[in-house]
Image (cartoon, rainbow, N blue to C red; front, side, top):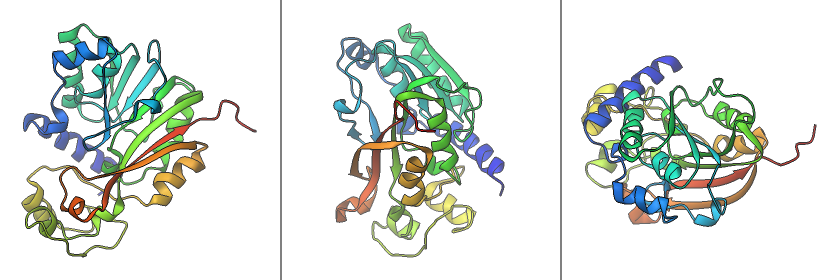
Length: 266
C-alpha cells in the first residue's frame, strides 16, 4: 500500500469516525467557547491530560495559530475564542466540517484547509507563530517531513506543541490488549498496520474502516524535531487514556514543546 493509499484510507476512515461519533470528533460546547472568551480554557495534546498553561504565550490575542491534523471542532474553536487567528489543516473533510459547524454556531473565524500533514506547501515560509499538533502523526507512515514542514512555516521564535504515541504501545498483541485486557508481546518495532497484522484482524479488533496506524521511533519523534532545527523546551508523558498499559505505569503518550530559534545560524 502506497503512502497516498494510506492517506486516502485514513481520510475515509476518519470521516466514518465522525459518523460514529468517536470522542475525538465531538465539538466543544457553547459553554466551553464562552469560557475561552473569558480566558478560562484548556486543551489536550495527549489523551485527557491538559497542556500546562505555561507552555503557551501569556496571551493568544492576534497570534497566527495552525492546528495541524487537529480538526474535530475541539481545539481550534477554543483557540479562536481565546483570540488567536486560527487555521485548521486536516485530512478529513468531515472532521473539518465539525470545526465549520462550531464556527458558524459561535460566530468564530476559522480557516479550514484539507491536506496531508507531511506537505504544508499551501503555506508560505514563516506563516505562523504557534503550531498545535495533537496525537495524529500515528496515522502517517513517516514523520520527519512533518517536523521539517512545521519548522519552515513557523516564524523565528515560533512554537510547536506536539503529542505522539509511545511506540511501546504497539509491541503488544492487539486483540489481547484491547479485547482481553492482558499484555502479550507480539510485534517488533517499527510497527505498521499495513504489514504487521492482517486486515481481518484489525477490523475484528478495532472495527471495520478503522484508521491505519504506524509506530514511530523516538529517534524520529524527538530526534526528528531536533534535526529539523527545533530546540526542545518542554516534555511530559501521560498514560494512554484507554489502554491497559496504564495499569502498569507504561506511558502511552509523550508531549513536547519546541521552539524555532529566533536567530538561525547559517
